[in-house]
Length: 191
Image 1 (cartoon, rainbow, N blue to C red):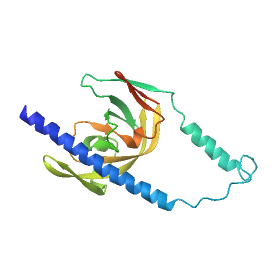
Image 2 (image 1 turned 180 degrees about the horizontal axis):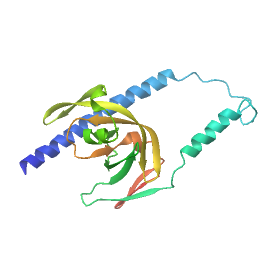
Image 3 (image 1 turned 120 degrees about the vertical axis):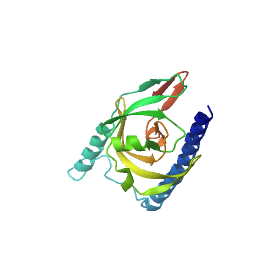
Image 4 (image 1 turned 45 degrees about the vertical axis):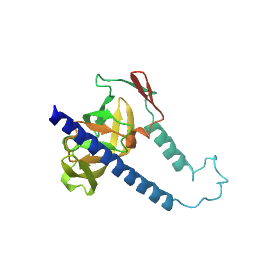
């Protein structure tokens, strides 16, 4: 019983460290994007008009919209342990994940990261997560796609944690790209 409590404490401490490190990474990215954003320009007087110079842009926008089309919603039932889990497809590989709206990033176990073809040892260490067993490296990567029952999100930032979390986490780097994440009773709805 004591070992189980220490293991759970270690998982929670690891999760808290990942959230903190992920938040710093997301804030850093947001700061860079804001700094790199071009100055506002005058409105395009030809906006809305289609001609040979805008057809490529209009086609690209239509293609992006079609690629982002997804089912209207996915409903997930609460598990017996009071959590919500999703059977995801990450870069073509099935991974069972705990949906964690408190996690800044998708957090992969080493085993799951290797299963989808990530060479974990080649990823740069982006920080350390403090656990009951001591500090462990956290490595950041970009996933091409994460899919939950037909809802596909592309370019999802993820952390690979070298600790036994037991299960990978589906965090905000996926959830924040959805229109809605809602919980009513024992049902989570993703749109």
